[in-house]
Length: 382
Image 1 (cartoon, rainbow, N blue to C red):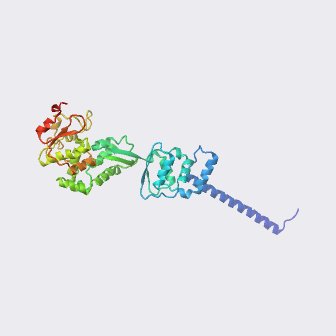
Image 2: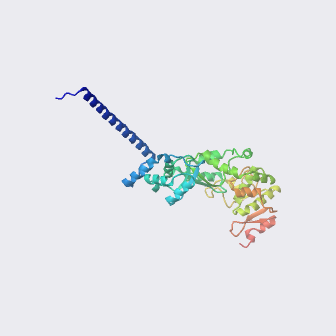
Image 3: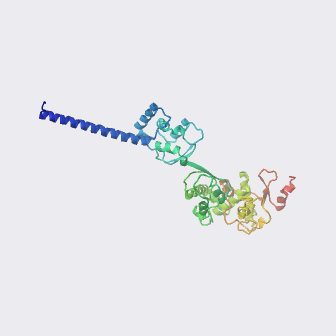
């Protein structure tokens, strides 16, 4: 047997150490690469099962190499509401995203959509895109039905209970009882109105709104109040003063005009009739105030029509056949055309009006009771 010299033993040991070092280094590199790839795959998401192996590897490589760009925040400073239409082509969606600063690289975002299969799962609807979110966040949002916004509409002339009735089928998480509990309290702004208000009735501005499904009742109501506050500007307030009305009184009268008028172009003349009656000390004698006082009926809903003679005798501060002046609070939520009609009524000497007999939804106006009687359908040949 050949005996190894000390130098040979030392060299063999060094070789062994080198091999072990290389193996350890390779293991660390493999482990590090595996962890990096795993983190990268967690970032870009799972590949769509319909992708071919070659295309999957190609897209994965592109996305991993550009993962920093995937995490780059969008270019918007305020949250943005993105609307995706049913059947909207992917190219059109990508163009909308890029035009509004929501993605900075259309090709990269397209690759991410295709890799994850999200290009086939984008849901139509409205989405609230937060400022500072990235492309990975956006892919997740566009596939999440719970992330889409809900459209909610308040029709002009609805009372607060009718708004509450629309909640259960809206897709929002707000309960009818919690909404009514909140809106039955005095409104806390605008400040000049808050002193007089009894409830939120009159200030829940009609229109179309978009809400997240998880919106709180406070956020929900504040959206209506904020829009009302924007509409009630200084010019309107000054115009109300010229009519001898406070802002709150003007909202009350606007709510009556809203329920009486069918055609917007008649509202200034209807407002003129009511102002003329107020200035003459005459009771308003308007049916919608009685309907409001009667409340809900299973047979007639919230707005009973026609009214009986017995209905007109209901004892209520809202019954303008029995009281002089305005009722104590609005009877519905008027839109901007009704609010403007009270601010800028059409000058007239009319004290009466009634529905025209032709079914047009328009009204006939009169200066005297005799003229008013002549405008009745029994005198029109209808």
